[in-house]
Length: 451
Length: 146
Image (cartoon, rainbow over all chains, first blue to last red):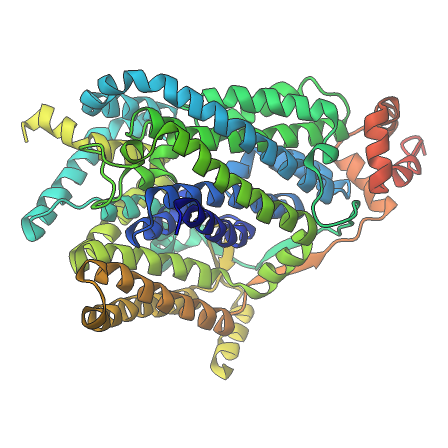
């Protein structure tokens, strides 16, 4: 079977899975992307297939997570948080479907602008790759300090860098003594599912439970919907006004270049810049939503692709979070030495297979979200319980950890999840900081203690 | 099933829910679903480890076992979905011009100013017309003064 066909099939798979997952609100990006992408890699998918799968998944998820954001007024996931105010304004005005259409049209445009931009920039930065690779230890450490400072935990995040590196190294030494091999997926999974696991632990503790106890069920107000176009596949350029298309194109191009900042930060910034130049509540909200969703998409895609092409080591918030398996999924992909998509695919491959991925996602998720948003959310809200979803992800984490290192792996994952999750939830030390310290831990420990 | 419904009833009576990842769940049901899910993934994986050495390439045994593990998890997702119903209240909103007026007030938007800005811009005006919203907006004209 030709590699293009294989990639196409993986893209279809990614788009289908994440179109559904995107509808489930409040889902944590990292906790969901990491286990599923890891599975695809470990199941032996070729690198091109993995990449097409990932790209299709990312775009599909972002397109459908606009559904809960617009129709229910709850963020589809963390990247949708900055959009909530504008989405709520339109929802209150009885036009949530307008918000939805503007958002996903912006997202599609953002994706198709980000891909070529990111590939070119990655190609350009590639000339400095040797420097980055040879001094990755110190770069990871400096990046950890930088990310820590800009995380929610700020000084607390900075203070725990060394203790957390010590903790990681200690676990690594213990598990190495038991198994005679270094583990990595188990650490990763622990950090990724940490916040979810921490909530479960808190719910199990009579002391901590109060924070999470609710006296009544969450209520969701679902807005009515009308359809305003003929046929199945609406044209995104017709949904947006010319001005919105131009703004989205410019901002998504710019944000594709700033791959070291967080997508949420870029989204808020660009939304603010464009919103402040637009008068009238309706125009302001629709234009901001279009631009913001476009920027989320472009930053996300650029942050995954640029470090992959240029360095092969994860040097951006997305590369450290949801895209981390593309860099590091031993024994198939490794960071030290660099043996991952960076070495296995050319820039041209990234463009072609990325294009396959986002095109498939756009063809599946875009018309789906346009036509069936309301029906799909009713279905999810009425029949899929949160219990089943959380249980599924804990089950997946268990499975992957067990596959890497049996019982040791499982215990290790949940140890990291406990510590990392509590740090995340209580002190605001985000998953990005923790991933970065994980990569930096060997170098830090070597400098401090010579091991 | 009867037992579950009984539990649900009890939970509603006690009004105790726990919020996980932004949604309310019942603590006991969550624990049961997690246990089921973990056990199913373990059994599925072990089944793969037992079956595949006989029929598959040794290199692929772990990958195939992951697949059987996932199959286990997916079966449990279906079971959990049937056993445990979502703890959400779904309210289907209807927008009337009365609630629209309220919304403008809540959002502190000047209706006349908003309509003026929309009417001044032919693109936006046409767009709202196509969505069928323009007329209900125009109906509110001057509503502020009343």
